[in-house]
Length: 403
Image 1: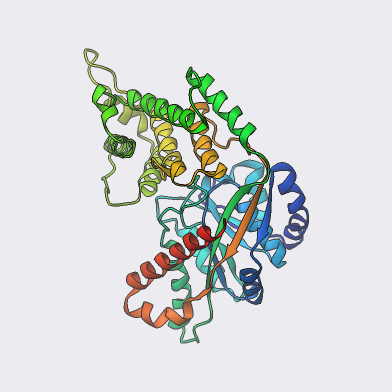
Image 2 (image 1 turned 30 degrees about the vertical axis):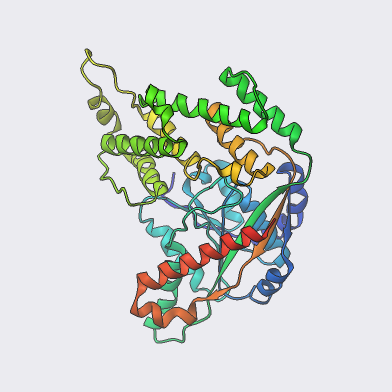
C-alpha cells in the first residue's frame, strides 16, 4: 500500500454524484439534509473563495451530509480522511470525489503538503473534521485539533514570504445534528432486547433502567477482562471507573510498545500513536513474546489482537460519560449510547442506521484568517489556539440551537 493517497478529483464524476446523492442518501443511509438558510446564503457568497470547513463528527454519515452541502452549493469540496479508508474500490471512489489520506499520530508530510497546496489555491475548498474521529454523540463536541487552522495560516505565510498580498481564507464552523423522523420506540425496544439476549440479562424496568443495566454489564465485563474488577469497584462512580479503565489500558499498551506516555495529550492522539506502532512495527512479535511472564505466573492478556481491540474500545467510548442520556433523554442520545454498546458487544464497526434521520446543518459565522494574520505572526500558537477554541464554541452553540 502506498504511504499517501492523493485526491484525484474528477469534476464530471463529482457532479454526477452530487446529482444522485440525495436519493442515495435517503435510500441507503436513511438520511436527508436540511441546511439552515441564513448560514447557507452567506456560504453561497463565499463559494469561490478559499474555504476551510470544520464540521463536528457525530456519525459515520457526516461526510455524506457535507457532500450534500457541496451539491447544494454546486461546487466540489476536497476532504481529508483517515488513511485506513483508502483500501480497494472505496479508496479509488473517495479519491475521485476529492478525498485524500492522512496517517494519524505522525507528521504525515505528504498529507500536510497536499493541504498547504489546496489552501493556497484561489478556490481551494477543504473539509477537515477537527475532532479527529467520530464522537458518537449527537449533541456535544469533543476538543478540536488545531492542525487545520495551523496549516491554513502556513498557507497564508507562503504569500507573505513571497512579498505578495495576503489573500482571504475563510474558516467555516459547521454544525451537524441528527433527528429521527419516525417513532423510535419500536427501534429502541428491539435494540435493547438484542443486547439483553447477547449479555444474558433479563429485562427489568423502563427503557432507561434497561439501558443502564446493559451498560453496567458491559463495563463490568471489560473491567474483568483487564483484571480491574473488584467488589469495591461498584462503590465508585461510573465516570471514575471509566477514567481508571482508560488510563490503565493506555498505560499498559504504551509500556508494552515502548511509547513514551503523554498523560496531558488527548486520548485519541495516544490511541492513534499506538495503532500506528502496531501497523508499522516489524518487531511486534518479539515485543509481545517478551511481555509473556514465566509459565508459573498468569499469562499476559496482551497480544496484537488484544491491543487492537482495546484501541477500538477506547475510541468507541472516548467521549462517553454517565448522565449523557439522563441530562437530555432524547431518542437521539438514547440511540447514540445503544450504538456504542452494539459496537462493543457485537464487535461491529458501523452498525446499520436505526431509522431515517434528518440531518440539520447550521453554518456558523465565517472567520477570515487574513484579518488575524498580523496577530498570528506575533504569537502563532496563541492565535491558533484561541481561534480553534472559538470555532469549537461556535459549533457547540449552534448544535444547542438545532433542537
